[in-house]
Image 1 (cartoon, rainbow, N blue to C red):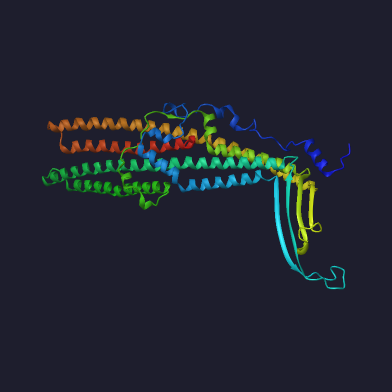
Image 2 (tube, one colour):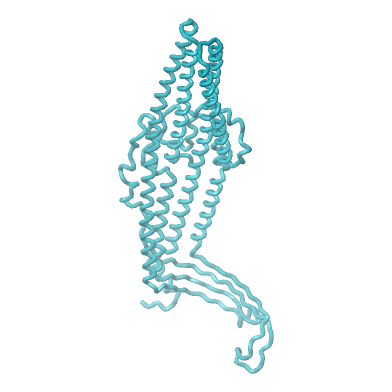
Length: 468
């Protein structure tokens, strides 16, 4: 069958086949995310964790209303999240542009007062001066027979989803850092209280020692030794207080407000954050579905795969259907039969530099391989970070448990020593020494509690929670 009319030729090409060239994307079977070891339960954590799924708003597990409010404010006002939202808006606009790529249209109008050259008109008499105009509208539609535009839209969609995941990753970070700053404030307050109590006990001991020195029952250097110990403890107050204030400054900026506008009431917190139950972690499969960086890496792989199709489509002709309507001529003849014009029909473009096209295809294929390797690396990093944080957290809990047992034993010794002192069986210095030992054990527990809070937050961040 012979096709004589160009429109009939275009219709025949449309009906002949519209399959998009290039590979159809799916997560490769060999990707590490599909490995059984990546999907199962975690090795670390022990009794400190449970296989229950992690809630979206994990910070609520601390059951601290002030913390809940701080995190919500940070998620609403944080500057990094504002950047992420703006990037998402930009990505959405680029996707919309790609989706409208099949259609194009242009309108133009031009008016000139001209004097044409006599020789250009092949005359010996100078043509008259006159107004001329040119105006028209042109539209075209790309048939996209081989799917280059569709693959481009597919790539842009995957890129946009990767930007969504980047926004979610920013939320994970903001929630974790806000909780960390608040925990540092609270643990700093507790450590300051313990240090002040220790200084008070040391000062009591110094008062008693001075009495003993005056009565000749203790050497002079013992008073100096205790005074030096007090000065050493006093020297620790300023850095601890500064660390607590710095955490408040950090918290303020996370919430999108200047550091000087932090709420002084935050500094009243002097109790560490407490979890009443083991941390719910789910399994590896849930982790990899939840972590935004893993999702972003997978979407970048999808985009790279789609771009192979974009490059492959250049091997084939690009056919567009177009129409133009306009008018060109002298102003006095405007919109007359002599000036009006129109055109309709297909336009075909084809890149005949085949080696260059195939080189671009090879480059796109190499890019997809790199994206797959990056995806595998991101999966491995997610699993490693989670296992490491769980292992560290479990060890920190064991350490805290031992230190609390030491604190309890020191409290028993202190209580018994006080009873002996009341009975006159031991002196005041012995009783104060037992109290100093107890306070030292309390200080060690307070430091361990701060480490446990930090490790808990690291676990939550590794688990990728904080968005919904």
